[in-house]
Image (cartoon, rainbow, N blue to C red; front, top):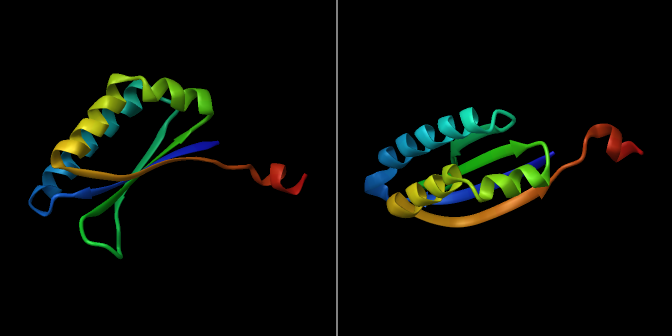
Length: 100
């Protein structure tokens, strides 16, 4: 499993608009890429920080997504209504892979 994690900071006066834009873009992403699981949450520890996590089956799926219009819309919304702090790709192991 692969996770694409984006951490963004919303402009304080645009936080509601950013949340609305993220919901719209992530909903469209779920329709286009039905294998993806999206999660979006606000930081409990820092003001105006939003974390977006997308769970993908493979690295190649993420590569395909990074070339898509949905990804461009996501990055565009964040850039217009805030700024990107960090983008990470994390590869995880299943429990049985850890033991073996």
